[in-house]
Image (cartoon, rainbow, N blue to C red; front, side, top):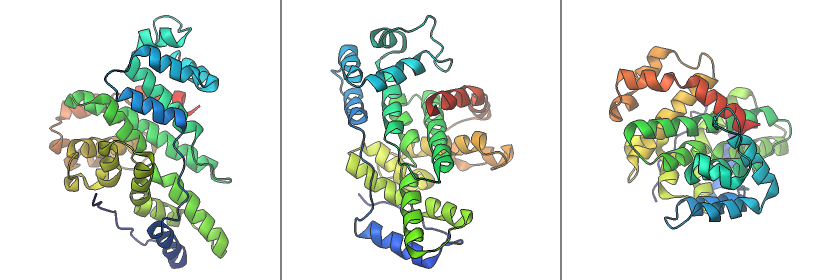
Length: 289
């Protein structure tokens, strides 16, 4: 599909590094992460109308580490189980197939996350933002009576290209013996993550609405087929930034964005979303462990 690519601002981006990055993207020489096998199978199962709880439980059971993490998260305050959950079957009964598959996909993706020595804090920050965006996308979808599971994936994966861009530009800079300033790194991530993200979406065979959210969330009016998902992801991204990055923008600038009107959300809807801050942060803290 034709993809609108955010044009980088060229603020502090060393020209040699940018040229090398563009060349690697154009020539398909970017080292893309592999979708964890379990994550791919859980996503496929979640989109299968004939799938049942037994199949999901059996799939998660194949990876004992994943099963342990899923049970830990299912028992966390973020999901507030009425009684302790002692098995995956119990988790399905308490949380439902959709919520359990959401946890399993998230845990699997975290286990396969890009690792960059010296940039562990940056990767953790990107992951927390992805988690907060996914959580907010679900809440926005509920308000709009949209598919919650699809919205969650859009929010969770809309910046999936950022860790890959970070790894690629730091590798290029090291090879060229060029020091990258923090501002340059931010400019590279903002300028190129959608372009790399759509490569990942193609490689991972992600649903079309997720691919469009990656490509168009920052310019949702250009989305050809899934504008609602792109709009919800745009708003989820802004809300995640608002609660995770102090002083990123004030309350007024948050509320003034056109995406609220385009989604037919009213001031009381905005208040309701902002009131979920502690709930979202609780979920982020639980999933990020």
